[in-house]
Length: 331
Image 1: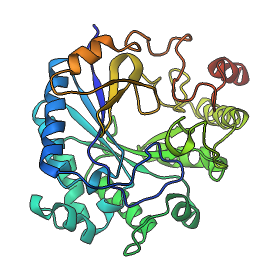
Image 2: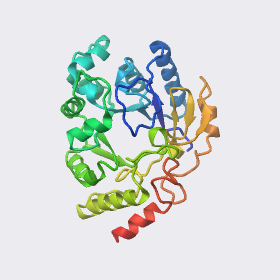
Image 3: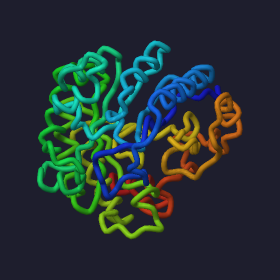
Image 4: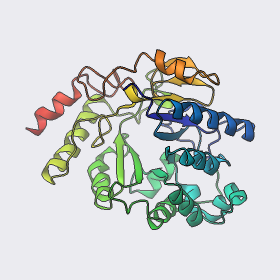
């Protein structure tokens, strides 16, 4: 029906991690909190008028450093818009950090923060790259040294499980297991563990943006052949264990991405893209979201069509006939 069903949004620019694979190029944290919050609330209002159902809070920084994050999630919740926050997860697992960020919301611990998210019907996707804690710490490279990132992230995951996010038949808890040279041999083990525990495993190769852009040298980025190899192993595991996957997606074992024809990304700097890894299509101005949506050149690219390619990976880590190659390997 041509409705805008999902929006990707930044809620700030600050980040205390320095991931070599990040799609964002900024680590700055200077902004006026109240005006930034009002801007986001305005975007949500415009989105609701266009049919908005879900809000993906993807960065550019660490969303839980944005002190009005709970206000934003609640604002969306009151308008029947579901929020999905992508996070390092460590603030949800560190009581002192959670209190420092959200004491003004009555939050005194990571467990209380997780419970509040559950109350607002939010979903959370945590960064989880490897079962090797030393490698995990090195890949994420936390800038703050007053907490152990991996320990805090794991506690955050436990807090969210205890808050009930993975207790639903359609889970509201996920992990983002980005596949890199350093961890892709663990792909099946990661997927298997989280799948058994009803935690959605979002597994994919790097986007063509930020620190992993084609124009930048990054030895962690998988080649096309390596992506093909790991995809075949994961889908074969699903086939052997009768785990349905519906279609073949660059987000391995996930539903085929419908971002192009159902959503857009609005960056902290007002750049509008079809998704974080896509080229810019406009600049956001208050009151102009409907106009931008109607003019979006990607809006009629039907998800799942063999003619539709992932604009964030095309020419880098995905063969144009990725799906056909995997299907042939599974026969």
